Amino acid sequence: MSTCLGLDIGSSSVIAGLLRGTRVLAESPRAFFKSRHDGSSVEVDPEVLLSAVATAIAGLGPEAKRVDAIALATMAPAWVAMDKKGRPLTPIVTHQDRRSVVEAREIETRMGAEQHLALCGCRPFPGGISSTTWAWYQAHRPSALRRADLVGHLNTFLHRQMTGARVTDPSNASFTGLYHTLGLDGWSDALCENLGISRALLPDVVEADVIGGNLSPEAAGRFGLRAGTPMMTGMMDGSAGMLLAGAKVGQLFNVVGSTDVLALCTDRPRPHPRLLTRALGVQGKWLQVSTLAAMASSIYWAREQFFPEMSVDDFRAEFRRMSGKGRRPGNSARFEPYMAGERTSLEQRQGAFTGLTLATTRHDLLSAIIEGLTQASAERLPLLEATGTSLLQTVAVSGGSDRLDQLMHRDWAGTWSYRSVTDATMRGLGLLQPRAR
Image (tube, rainbow, N blue to C red):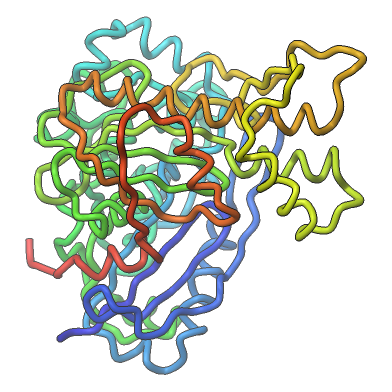
């Protein structure tokens, strides 16, 4: 069986792994990189990210040069414009960026909300659809785009740097806001015309397991790999996890972590204004997704703000004790769980406490956070059921340390069973078998 180099690139780190099927033979330490936060803007320096990729690959040692193929799983959207030589003209603007609310409204007003939803599969959510970022650069940084020859997401940038190819996959294309997601049949003239852009700036769309290009000698030297190694187009990180979960129609895959992502696999997508609808990237299937942008991160915030004297272990014990008890008796505090905004809203919501009195304690506030998160988790199920796809009752779960998975499923209506899928993104990449265009 062939050996594959998997690259898992998230919002703060890169992990490289050697894969034989879904078996991880070796995995590098995380190579961290920093994002720049300036108000509602969140960017990554492209050179910093490329250095993190090189560091992660180096963590595998000389075996990295012996792989038969390379597979990518990347955060998305992660938008960047490039010149004719593939050099970045802009920072990488990540899915955490929320600067383009005005542009999102303008996109939807010009096209009409229903038509945009029908073509794209989503509303133009800042941070969820990168067309809003492109529109922001047109309005505020037009000089950065004058020499643009290619515009895409992180997998397109990595290919341009490593193989010279101009490619993306359907999962990333879906989140540009320019792709006919529901038809999986290419870039939409109507969506491109609404933004006033040329399709010539967009990459070719091929499925995630197709070989996008072969590693150039220059890239081989920089990244410590073998020149000529075939590199698959790659996909969004959540798609790789769904592949490991089985990618059956009706399968739910729940990633429980700093952000909580609940995805439904379907072969008949039905767009919903409060869901993200995107291509899986292979197999002609789609994912319909609901996200809590700040789940575990809200709990970490509460520890830092309200229980700073507690050790991590003591706080975890206190948190577990409170999680199983429901709302504290007499606690009128309520929590709006939007500490990192909302990925399915044009106007960005914010976290908030209400119902506070002079009797409210820090334990009441923590209890309110727990109850707000569990309620928000349960409220996603009716949205997914409304798509018309019958939900399988066994949910694949990734993550969930400190029993967070049990907490987030506590208030789900109905009867469910859960199975753990570990190292989901990396192992999911091992299911991609490279094929020629």
